[in-house]
Length: 92
Image (tube, rainbow, N blue to C red; front, side, top):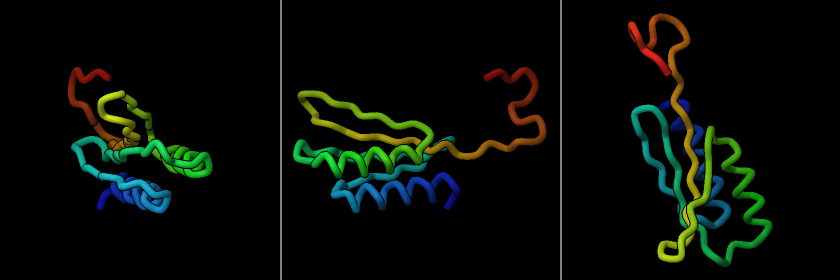
């Protein structure tokens, strides 16, 4: 498992311990963790959840009246630090 996968798995485990049901997905450049957040989540659980996703590179919450609330976190996979990573003419 990649380093991002390990971090994402740790985030997922902590979210599960907080009472959520996280989903982890591996992608080419990052690993994501998503979980539906129930309306009944306590303030203490919210603090734990926010502390947990702070370990990710990015995180957020999508809330809609149709689909409820989905918490998401992204952990980027490491990029090589030496050599011509992007190739000639590559721009970020």
